[in-house]
Length: 127
Image (cartoon, rainbow, N blue to C red; front, top):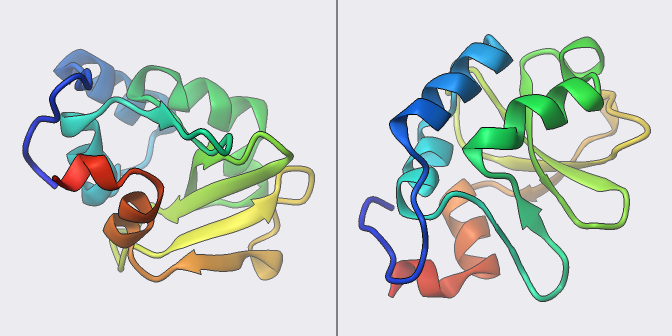
């Protein structure tokens, strides 16, 4: 995931830097690689992957640091379920959780690999 995508707007370096500062966590490399191609998106099914410029606000609003320390909320399904990545850089599994209960003990694995998960949502990013 490193090439630009025709018609997609990449995140600016300033947006990525702001996301890092607001989260006060390391950003997972696969997420930053996605932002270099497309700064977030929403699928026809309502799955949103947040752009760099608003990820800090979303994590603050859902109090992710308090309820799921070490995780970053990266998107949602427009129906009350959030998608998260671990910020420690140990793998790139995508987890999901009810946004009203962000306890990691209740997380479900959506995909063991972020890139595969993104490809299942937006195959056009890999053409």
